[in-house]
Amino acid sequence: MILRFVALTGLLAPFAILAQPPADKPPRLEFEVASLKPNQSAGPGYSIVPRPGGKLQATNINLKRLIAVAYSMTDFQIFGNLSWLEAQRYDMDAKAPGPATVPELRLMLRSLLDDRFKLKVHKETRELQRYALVPAKAGTPAGGPGLTESPNGDCAASASPQAALPNGTPCGLVNQGLGRINGNRGRILQLCDRLTTLLGVTVVDETGLKGIYDIAVTWTPDPNLEHLPPGYEVPSDATGPSLFMALQQQLGLKLVGGKGPVEVLVVDSAEKATGN
Image 1 (cartoon, rainbow, N blue to C red):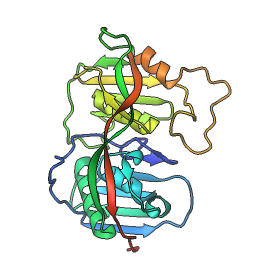
Image 2 (cartoon, one colour; image 1 turned 135 degrees about the vertical axis):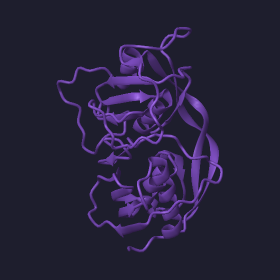
Image 3 (tube, rainbow, N blue to C red; image 1 turned 90 degrees about the horizontal axis):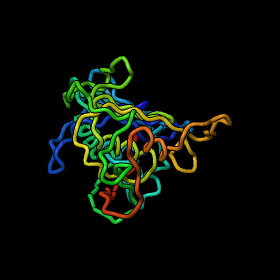
Image 4 (cartoon, rainbow, N blue to C red; image 1 turned 120 degrees about the vertical axis):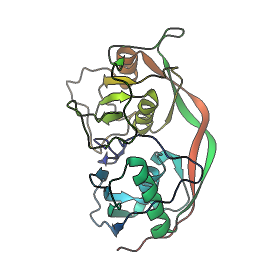
């Protein structure tokens, strides 16, 4: 989560964004073995992390977040009238038949949810609040000290999420931490995904930037704006810019609010899973 599917202390974010499987009838892939048990800790934090060897492990995670990970969405894009979607927490330990990419793990997780929860969902497009990421100055190409086109080109979509480079960010990913976003040969769409998770509002790419970029932006977190760990308090000596200002100063980009079409996933039905 910090990335690679990781969500810590209630912050659903940071999971790897690689090539996604086709939306129409993706192949059914299954874990070789999978354990799913109720978590009784009642703690606020949770995690879901891919491990080497085709493993996917989760701790203290609810069904709503499992669905979000399986379908490459965020919490606020999941709709349903079942109160226990968020109330019941689970621990999961699953293993693929062999090494697996992040998109393959997502498909295996979908199969697991179908089998254990009898999950039925469908996609819709709804008119919701969202942000557009645009150049900070109209008519001027976006760019700043923290946004540079990578001289090394693209990364293979199947690159292992564990293959981190010296700067800590795996090749081809855009990672998020507390008050920072770093990208190593990533795309602006991935930056929008990180901002979507952080703000809890869909962020769409209207920058016109189609290349591969190294990205580095830092700011002072704002509990009133961002989804932050429970109990987080801004340091009294914090002097950094806000997220909105940092995007303008460091990347030459800005967020413009409004309403627009947002893809959501509606939970039609689900049953509580039994531990095994």
